[in-house]
Amino acid sequence: MLYHLLYPLHAVFPVFNVFRYITFRTIYAVLTAMVISFIVAPWFIRKVKQFQIRQYIREDGPASHHAKAGTPTMGGGFILFSVFASVLLWCDLRNVFVWIVLFVGVGFGLIGFADDYLKIKRRHNKGLSGRAKILLQIAVAGAASIFLYACPDYGTRLSVPFFKGVHIELGAAYILVMMVVIVATSNAVNLTDGLDGLAIGPYLFAIATYLLLCYLVGHSRLAAYLQIPYVAGAGETTVVCGALVGAGIGFLWFNAYPAQIFMGDVGSLPLGAVLGTVAILIKHELLLILIGGIFVLEAVSVIMQVGFFKATGGRRIFRMAPLHHHFELKGWPEPKVIVRFWIIAAVLSLIALSTLKLR
Ligand code: 57M
Image 1 (cartoon, helix red, strand yellow):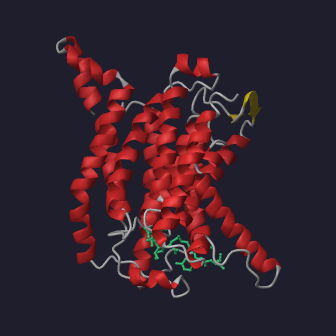
Image 2: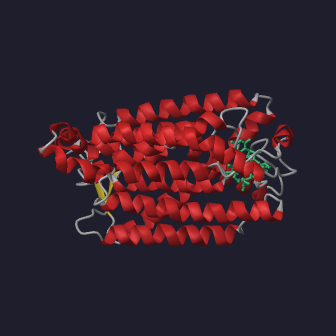
């Protein structure tokens, strides 16, 4: 909104010319979302406590988690509020990519809200049925993917990290790829959100990495120099990533161990879905396997555990899945698991960025 109100005045007030720069608006999107979340969070936590919106702990979880019973949850509500407010303030709202990301965020946020609401109402950790949840996610991801596919001159080629010239033309099949990336990333972040700060920490590294990639992919000269796909208009998603970074830092302030609030599915589902959407918009979806490596590890650990459990009639690979529980049951204190996962996430982001030159 500020872009539309103030940039046109640069003819009279030259200082307003600064609003044309994505870098400027991204920095202030970060700061705005952070300040909004710092201001809103204390009020939000008080309200959530007042309405008894508290976490129910599953009996079969690690014993250390029972002390967490009653922790306020659904903190994703103020994350989304901070992101949307900052995006509406700082983005060029004529950019279709911004609205696609907002659509996915709202869609998955509503699914997460419904799941959390049912858990609170039933006073149990069982919310929406797995089937209902996945069908709703497929519907939202499908709508966004089909819309994107229908956008004129939106490419359906799959870029391969490390190999400059390799682009696989998928045509309409790319719609399926987009849906899988969005739904899988959403659920992987959701699974990871099982310790204080364990999801939001790696998420911040991932979205900050995509913030840089959005800027490069949306910059014709830099994209040409780096020989990465140029996507006209993708640069504006840099500002959206900035808002996500700011809101994520604000949430981490309150979710850091020992957490004052959990994000709930209303946070984990949209955050993951939006990360997947950004990766698709800038044609760096395969790189998400590396950048979102922690989320991949957590999801794969569950798939392996459940598969092995079924195949062997009850034996387990890990002490408990997802992976963070395995280390908890090995005796690692929670903060140690969390910070070590953050370190791995940071290393994976650096390796992913190195692929820009390793091509
Ligand atoms: C998402 N939710 C946390 C919180 C957060 C198939 C199976 C692997 C599914 C998986 C599952 O239930 N996943 C759901 C993970 C939950 O966190 C809430 O959920 C929101 C995110 N969606 O925002 O509201 C618990 O995590 C802890 N937590 C924190 N700090 C945080 O900042 O401590 C969350 C955020 C919270 C709190 O205790 O209650 C969760 O773990 O449920 N199931 C599991 O992960 C279970 N694993 C399991 O069953 N493994 C089996 C098989 C099926 C793979 C095995 O290994 O044999 C574990 N989780 C729980 N109990 N709660 C173990 C059993």
